Image 1: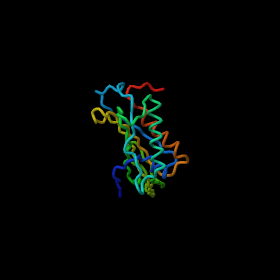
Image 2 (image 1 turned 30 degrees about the vertical axis):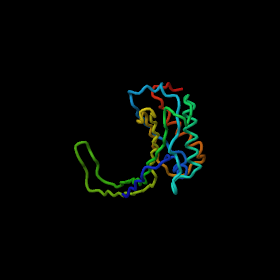
Image 3 (image 1 turned 120 degrees about the horizontal axis):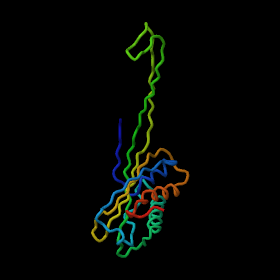
Image 4 (image 1 turned 120 degrees about the vertical axis):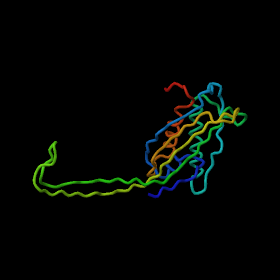
Length: 192
C-alpha cells in the first residue's frame, strides 16, 4: 500500500474537503492545559491563515477565518489586533490513503459439521474472494489556541474526516466543521 503523507499545511483540511467531500463525518477530540484559568481570556486574534499555492485558494482561507471568528464571538470573545489574550490558528494534515476490502463467498454440497467434528462422505466446497479498493484523503484539522501572555498552547481541537468528494455547500461545511471542533472551547463551558 502506498501512503503519501503531506506536510503540515496552514489552513484546514476542510478546505481540501471543499474540493473532495460531500458530507464527511467529522470526528473531534480536544486537549487543554488543566492549570489554565480560561475565564481570564477575553480577546483573540486569528493568525497565520494563508492560501497555499496548489493547495488552498483565498476564498477558502476567508471562509475558515470567518467561521473561526463567528464561533469565538458567539462564545463571548472579542477580536482585536491590539494585544489580544489568545492567538488562534488552523493547521491541516492530509494523507492520501487506500482502503482494501475483501468479500469471500463459499458454496458447496455434501457432508455435515457436527459439534464433535465433520461427519459425512465426500463433498465439494468452493469459494471466491473479491478485493475492492477505495482511495480517499484522510484529513485532520488542528485548531491551536495560544496564550499571548505565556506564548504557550493552552487548548487544541482536532477534527478528522475521510474526504472523498466535493461538498454541495462549502461555506456551510466549513462553518459546521469548525463549530463542532470549537464546541469544547473553552473547557467547562456548558453545552447549549
